Image (cartoon, rainbow, N blue to C red; front, side, top):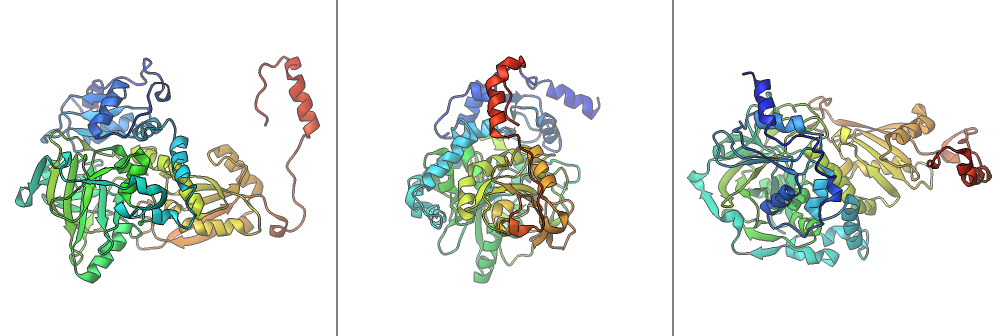
Length: 521
C-alpha cells in the first residue's frame, strides 16, 4: 500500500467534514470561565463535537503533519493522535485552528468581546502608562494588578520530574513537518526567560529544533526580547535561565504569542486573556515561575559564551522552509509533566495554518494597545495571506499633509508591523478587511511617483524572498485621499447622486417590485 492510500485510510478514522449535524460554533457553545487545564478545554471541545480522536498508530515524522495539513482550512476539529509510534504521549494539533475555538479558549462570544475586555481595562490608564501596568508579576499595577499570577507550592505540571541524566528529549513526540527539515522540533511551546535584575519575565513562541537528548535550538529572531536579553547575560558572564511550557490553559500560549513589548509580563497577560489570575509554580532547576497546570515544562539554560549552532531548514507558515541559520542552544536540565499529559504541536503549512489563525486573532484582540501608541490609527489588519506579518492595512484619521508617511514610520517601529514588507494606508472610512475596497482605494488615490515610499529594517528570517545577509526592505502605499497641500492642480471628485435622490429611491423602493432593498452602494 502506498503512502497516499495509507493516509486516506487513516483520515477515514477522523470524523467526516463538513459535519452537517454540527451547527456553527457560535450557535452552540457557552461562554466559559477560565480553563484550569488543557484537559478541561478538550473535554468541552469533545462535548461540542470539535474534537476528533485518531486511534490509528501514526508516525511523528511527517505523517501527523500531513494528516493535520490535509484538514487545514476546512473548519477541521482539534485532532488528538492517541498512538504515536515509539512515543508514550499523545499529540494534539489544530487546537486553535479556528477563530471560534480561540474565542472559546478565552471564554468570549467573539474577538470583539475580547478586544473590548482589553479596552475596558485601559480606560482609566493613560496612554503612556499601560505598559508599566502590565509589568512584572506581582508588581503589575493599575487595572492589570488584579490579574497578577498567584504562586503555589505544588503543581500538576510537576507530578512527574526527570532531572540531569534522566532527561531524554527523544522520548517526547516532537514532530518533523517537512522533508527538508533535518530533524524534529517543538512548535507549540511558550518559551519564557527573565531579566537578570528585575526578574521581569519575557516570553515568545518559537520553533525549538532537537539537537540531542538534552539540547534544543531556539530559532528566535534578532529583534525578539529573549535575544536581546542574551546579550545582557553575556556581559555579566552568567547563564540565561529558560523554560519551555507546553499545554495547560490555551491562554498561556496566546499570551506568549502576543506581539507586544518585552515589558509586558506574559503571565499577567494570560490572566487578562482568561479573565482570571494564573497559578504559577517555581521551576525545579532554574529561577523561573511557570503555569502550574501546564502539561509539560522543559527547564534549562543558555550559556552565552557558547557558540551558536546551525539549525534548519524549518517549515514556516508561508509554505516554505527557512534557510539554515545559527541559533542559541538550550541545555535542558529538567523535564516535568502531568501524570497524563498531552503534547501540543502547531503544524506549519501554507496560510492559513493554526499559527496564522492565532496571530490573526491576537491582532484583533490587542488593537486597543496599538491604538494607544498611534492615536490617529482607526483600525488595522494583517491578512492571513501574508502570514499575519508581511502585509498590513492601516486606516487613519487624516488631518495634516504627510501624515501617512509619519504613521508608516511609527508602524514599522511597532512589533506587530516590524516585518510588514507592504503597508497600505487608507482613510478612516475604509474597512481594512474589505480587500476589494482597499484595492479600489489604491487605484483611486495612489500616484506611484508620489505615494510609494520605502524603508529598511531588520531582515525577516521567515521571508522566502529575503536575500541572506541583507537588510529587510519595506514598501508603503499612501492610499489616503490627498489634502490640498499634497497635490498640485485640480482633483477628480468621487461621483455623487445627492441626498434628495437617495431619499426618494429609498421611499419608493417597494414600488419598483425588486425585492428587499439592498445596501447603499
